[in-house]
Image 1 (cartoon, rainbow over the protein chains, first blue to last red):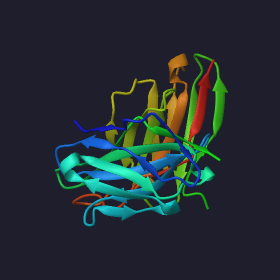
Image 2 (tube, each protein chain N blue to C red):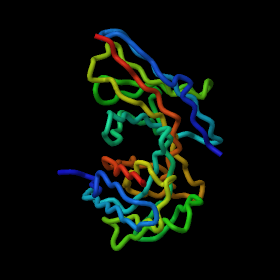
Image 3 (cartoon, rainbow over the protein chains, first blue to last red):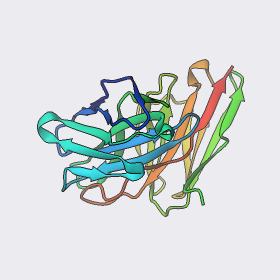
Length: 118
Length: 116
């Protein structure tokens, strides 16, 4: 069964500093990987996704993520954090049904809470 | 123009009551989902419907009954509510494509259910 681990429960950075949020996955086939962000009291917003191709993917709000198959990782990065980036970030892996149709099931990590100091 | 909308956003109710959460998507997707986020922020899928047909049911108690009147709507009805049902329930949708993921899952803003 697939699983996702986000090793850092809580990260604090200063505004303007760089950011890297870690995500490791376990899945037997080609993974479909996602990063979502959840602001307090809000829903989930898709930041970026990886399906295939270029292993460095760009997302919204200046975020990017790099897929590294050898490390089973999909870490999220941002070169300069803004106060508005404070939120909880979720990494997820999508299950691909080998029967030929997309299954549509996401397995999420535990989330990483990002605090930004002024 | 909200893509995936859920109502109500907040719901406080007593144990033993029956309640429903409604969800509608205007993205033209054929697959809809219910996810549950517990008090520890752990997100897990509950149900998935494709063209009104149930395709995923993740060992959810029978008190939870999804209903999809058409592919744009997926409602969640919960009978005999228990304290442990307190959570945030997210509706989501995507387009199911053969051969893999051609699209992604879009989430609603969540419904905060509190059982007292």
